[in-house]
Length: 298
Image (tube, rainbow, N blue to C red):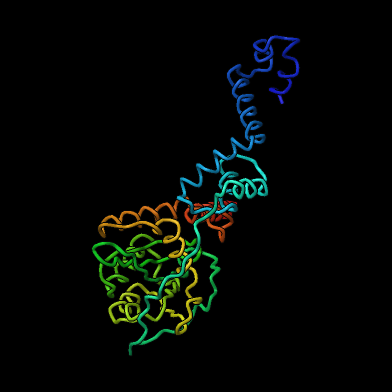
């Protein structure tokens, strides 16, 4: 490489002369070695310097990352460091992800409404976007009363493609979330899209079933009392409550709404997802689309 040649002979001929003869810019030469020096420094960070980066990530994620995601985030930021070193340093300084908590079930399945078959059957790995959507409901406590959240998740990328926040847990809650997902994604009506949910009365209601039929979506429902059939949404809600809501007191529903929406936007755009090889849901989908474009042009 020309820059390496210039560096080796800098004591023999002036750098400016070598750059002119080799037809490279002096500025480009200096920028190259500034970048290389920066990379060397990153590879040889002291524990104190590395700890600063770890604490910054811990603060930015509000304690949401344990050592595996913290290590992956460091690598994404260009800081080359071993995972064992990150784990050891975090343990030494008491830096850990917030603990998991259990939350009560909100499903009301004691009704006489039609129940769809379990078409998903825990096949949570999907090959393309907009082939399987998953819907679910959870709740958030505020001083003004409960706030209910309904989401629609695309199983391919685990991206939250639709949501609704209301003070009552009615069919309108899940209808609004589905409508948002539909207008955001515009899936083809003949694509065979499946919508999977629990057996709650909101999802079994005639209005919701009519909307699924209008959009050309096939309903799928979990088995009775089996939360594992909807494990992806349970995981999402657990992360939301542990990483962002736990320990907070919301004086109003508006305050809680702002916090929930901010977390979901961060989750979609930034949060590293272990199921997606530690990239965010949106990045995972963008990578897939780029790969499809390359194949089409080959």
